[in-house]
Image (cartoon, rainbow, N blue to C red):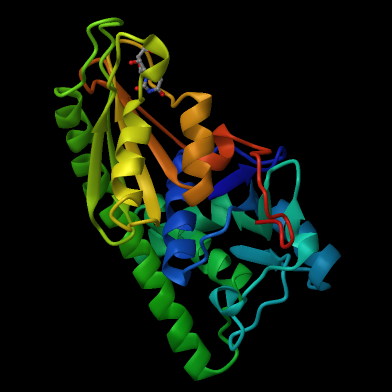
Length: 295
Ligand code: THU
């Protein structure tokens, strides 16, 4: 799940990955397993007022506004669609566009003070609210409002849990690296792939005297999982030595067959350095053999 910060955004106190984690938790909770992205604009009161005036004919500042790109509704939310409309597919991003979210940063700050919590917390509430709107949730009637609030809380809890689970996954990748068989390159790689079932499959690179037979750590883990019937994944951690171990092209393509928007967590320099991206960021325009609905 990719969040694109629009060009006229103001600097935020929180990194983009903070928003991406929440959006990812929200789409996972909804069961939306296609590559998706959304745009986020962080502006000031004058900026959000101009947007509100231009598109909603309301000449007032507010905290968050969302513009869904797909016409979901409370009884037809994103997960209930077999296929997403073809015009939601963006070939530049190789993902479906969910829509735009606009947030006023000064408003987030003043509301945070009012409620006595941090600006991060307030931004997370405003953002997850916007994401739910993009997926069809609404608060027009009490019943829908309860459902939307419930989804928001669950998505935020999911995003918070992700931190703990991610740490365990990265640890598993470091442990798996100990088994790397690398007499030729001496470059050891470990990986840990988390299935949606919750199971973790580990892998290491396995070299061979006939060099071309080498199997990367990522594909070792992937093939272990596939071969026991676990085929849905949400994250893969990869660990290696001194340089950032972004997966090679072959592993990106192999992973994209099963999990085109999987989160890729890399760890290097004994775990002192860490980074994260989604697979659709690492492999735009991947080879697909079934393009009908853009999947
Ligand atoms: N390798 C991996 O395990 N994963 C990658 O994504 C790139 C490379 C391994 C293969 C080989 O054993 C060693 O790193 C040097 O290329």
